Structure formats: C-alpha cells, structure tokens
Length: 379
Image (cartoon, rainbow, N blue to C red; front, top):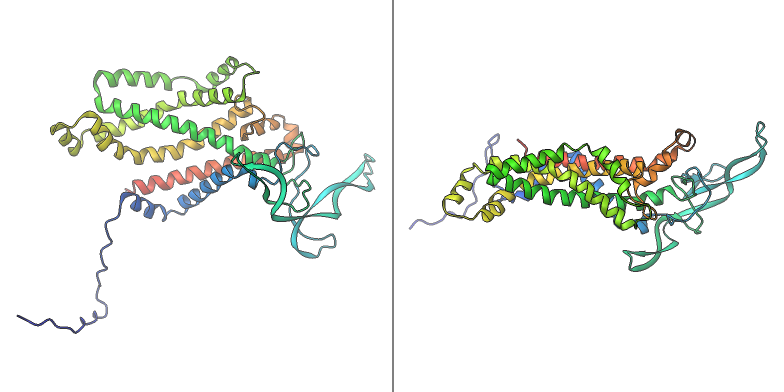
C-alpha cells in the first residue's frame, strides 16, 4: 500500500489558469436575483417600489400634518432653510412662514407678503404633532419630520381649501396603490386561469373563449368609463363607489393578460415533458398546475410589474375626470381635480405636485419590470 504524501501541492506556475471551485446549485429565484442585481435600473426601481409601499403603509407617521386640517388657501411651499435672517448658517433646519410686512406694494397698495424671519419654525425628526392611530389601532402622535412646535408647515404648499399638499399626496398613495394592486391581482388571477385553460385544452373551447376575449378587447374603454359614471348615484357610499371602480377596471383588463398567457401555454403544451406527463396518464389538473403554471409564472410576474403603472395612470386620469374615489378618501387622481383650469396651474404651480408622485410610481414599476424581464429571460 502506497503512503500518502503529506506535503502540500506545489503552487501554480506564473501565468497558468487556475480553475475556481464550482458554484453550488442555485435555485431559479437565486439566479433571477443575481441577474437582477446587475441591472442598476432594476435595482433603482425595486428600491423605489419598496419606499412607495412603506410610504403607503406608514402614511400617518410620514405625513407632517393632518391631511384634513385647513390653513391658508393656496399657500406657497415652505422650503427648509439652514440660514437665519442675517444669512448665517444654523445647525437646525427651519422654515419661515409668510406674513404681511409693513411695506406696501406701489401699484396695488396692498401689504407685501414675505417670509417672517423674526419667528422661524424649527424642524426636527420624530416630533409631536397631530394625533392618529397607526394601522387604525395604535394611538400615536409622532411624525417623521415636521415642525417642533406643532405649528403648520407646508413643504409643498396648500390647496384651495388650505390643506397640506404633501400630507394629502402621502395619504393618496395608499388609495392609489391599493386600487392598482387590487385590480392587477384580480386581472392576474382571471387572466392567468383563462389563458392556461384555453391554451391547454384548445379545440372548440379555445375558439369560443378567444372570440369572447376579442369582444372584451374591442370595448372602447374611455367612453365606457364615462358612461358607467351615470350608473352610480352621487349619494352612494364611498366603499360602494370604490368597489365599482375596481370591478370595472378588472372586467376590462383581464383579457390582455389571458391572451399573453395563452400564447405561452400553447408553446409549453408541445414540450417533451408535458407530452410525457400526458403519456403516463397524468390528469389535466396536475399537468396545468405542476408543469405549465410554474413556467408561465416568470412571464406573469413581469407582466404584473408592467401592468401596475398602467392602472395607476388610469386611476389618475379617471380621478381627474371625477370617476374615481370620492371624499373623504384621498387619491392622486382626486387631487388633480384642482388643476382643471389653466389659471390655477399658472398661478399656483405647486398644485401639480401629485403628478410627481405618479411619475415616480410609473418609473419605479416600469424599471423594476424591465429589470425582471432581463433577469427572467436574459437570452
């Protein structure tokens, strides 16, 4: 029997190629995550989506003021400043409220409105403010960033009723994202189910189902939305109106998803392992759930991330037209009703602030969808 040489192996020669140890077997989710991390746009979209969801969940804590509290109408934004009235740098940020000065306008002879440098409002984190109930259960009064003395501060100005635009936009994210996520969930469930069943069984059932899908796709959505507004009385409860909006959006949106899933199912039904499952006598339910459904999920996930921005834009547009949520609920579309006249936009441009939230949301989900699409199918 030969003795084993205890000496270590010689070092590799200079310039030689050293093989690295093979990476362990990675799951499909790990592979997708590794590819997604290489896309800076996909990761930026992911972080923005996370921040938007956190903002919607903790709206009471992140909003600096009560969204229903009123102050001076159409007050301009109060930007944080690190300078005192003499122009010296200060450690704590502050805002200066607008006040009437003793000087008069030479044309209108009205008091000139300007910042009140003699009474600054100091800003801070985790300060005491308007009381609320976190998650509707936990009483609290701490706000993430607001005025330390409890005085109103408007970082994005106020609307015509004097309500804080930033606080209303933060609360509006909850309703707008809730509508988008609910509609996309219903669209995904119905569209995926119909698409897989239609593409797998084929035949006459597939023919009649696709004619029905084409009928749904042929509906002109905008005139239909406007016509449906007359079916709901003005005095209807808010939850009934909101449920009706979600049902209508879902009823008109599932057809496109089903058409895409059907195309993927038709291709998968001809693959060898599906034919082998049919040959050994597997039931149709098992083949659909165990072999086809996992392979269409990658496409469905990407389609969901790309469908959410579409629903957000649709909700904002319908809210601007009046076919969306009703007060006291707040949504980005409902806030945009204040921009109906050009004179308001020209005089008070900060009323367009909800558009910025809509743009960020659309960019976030689109960037995440593009990154997921490249990660799921890199070739």
